Image (cartoon, rainbow, N blue to C red; front, side, top):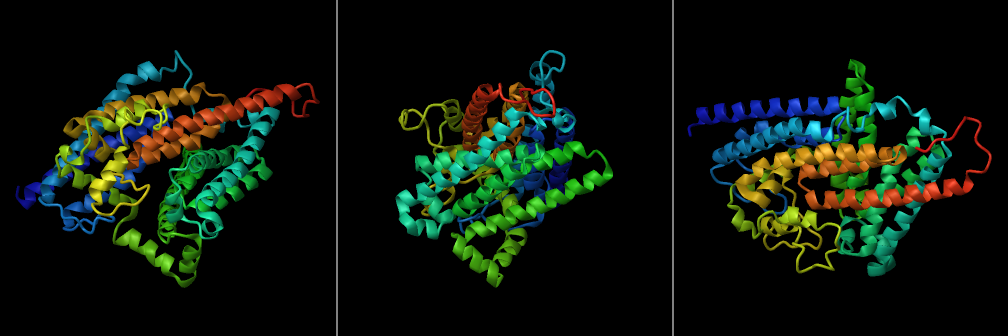
Amino acid sequence: MNEFLFFMTFYGLSAAIITIVITIMMMEYKEQNIALIFWITIFFVYVLPSLTDPFRKNFYLWGAYNISIYNINDILIYAHIYVLVFCSTYLLARLCTRGVFFNKGEARIFLWKDIIDFPEQFKYSRQTHIFTSLLAIVAIVSLIISSYAIYSKLGWSGLSDSGYNLYRLTADSKYTQLGAHLTHIAAAGLFVAWLTRRWGVFCIILLFIMGNFFLRFNRSIFITLGIPFLTYAVFKNNNFKGALKIIFMIVIGYLGIHFLQAFRFFGSAYDALIALQNGELFEKVKHLLTRTGGESDLRYFYYFLIDHDRSAFNLFWGQGYIRIALLPIPSKIISMIKPEDVDTVLYYFLHPGYHVKGGSSHTLIFGDSYANFGWVGMFCGSIWAIFASISNRILAWLPMGVRIHMIGIFGSAAVMIARGTIYNSCSRVFWQLLISLLIYYFGVLLYDMLKTSTMPAHGNQIRC
């Protein structure tokens, strides 16, 4: 294919992808579906950055030392066709399943206006106050458990020089995993505390969330924390001034993610603070934004996979989705049946001879689909469309307090799934939803025990 025909084909496919993705985002915005977060992520980490790829000759792959991708023009065309079919099948499946999973006349659906228009409904509820207070306790407990996970394996020296590299050494600890779940539950609770104006709870949660970040350097904590505020602004501000605020928040969030990514690369809190003092940290941020492109570099891993037959990955058909189906059963119980995480297998494939405990590679949702199903995976968009419809119904079925609380967890999972972190995202939603419900109903039990006490002056109590 000559250069002129290549450019015409590539940008023709790009125009089709942009049109479909914008159509999907408009549809999800109208339906107020949390999947809007997924498609905003896709737009910024793949759709827009890929427009410059025909002018690039070298693709940098993290830790893979500039692995060469041959016949790059053909790979870009194949990759775009894959994405176009994926997005098209998602759109068609969403339009078909809305009547089954999203019928306003037959079943309750999750709507942001329920939260924006009626905050007073649960603001003064004693049950809401109990729930937010329990979330503050969870924030404290999460830091204690996470600290103990590091101390139990590395001693006091691990706590004094904590950071992402040391966190990886304890990644398989049950205390680390429990601490991570509780941290995200607490982070999602910050929005509940803000919405109900529980400023004491707000400060406690924020303080201990920051402590958890400096202990583990996990950026996803801030995604869970920030997503509810961003989506609240999106659905509350339907004017030009509101749009400017949203754009500003997205830009700040994008820069913030790269700042946290650079912070994590220094390995420990002490080294990162030294880098902040001497300016090396800002140089690292500049490097991520210019030379390597930060999060948008994940598409290069996707291109690299497209350049290979899926048999090279040593994965069996649908391995990741089989693992998701077996999610409720711990791996230690069915270790011979439950397959290994696809992200881990791809890490070993993409980083030959460079094995790090807890390592994983993310290749966007498109790369994960290709790794699981090959070219048939381009039709996986229909599967995720059904997931999007069901997730809205799940949020609608939850009590109001838990519904608001789970926005951050569902939204964070949407971002991670778009990046290709499929199993861990589904696992996080599953277990954190169960834990959140346990916390809520424990609060209900406390409320029922105290319901005979004096009612607040604000009026009748409601169950939120």
